[in-house]
Length: 132
Image (cartoon, rainbow, N blue to C red; front, side, top):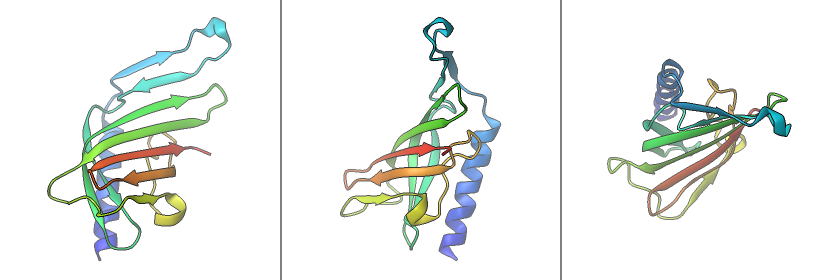
């Protein structure tokens, strides 16, 4: 049941993200041949959640999403935040991925695959996500 609640929370966060318009978008200089589109703090600082795939759920405050879309369409995303006091951080670092937790990152951006995610005992959260 807890896994279902965690997934429902993640879906709610993703739905919230989908309703928010990106804060800033910057395109690389088209003359340099790169042409990537960069979105810094794409949704503003929002609350997101992390599930360890077994039984632990962390609420993350001030999640910031930085999204880079390459000219070939590959989406790479970094997410950072801090663990909310209502869900204490782990006693040792949690490291996961979509492969280990079944959780997705941000399907709204196209970067659904969590390549790595970490929650530290000091309460820091970070994730790297990709569309590939």
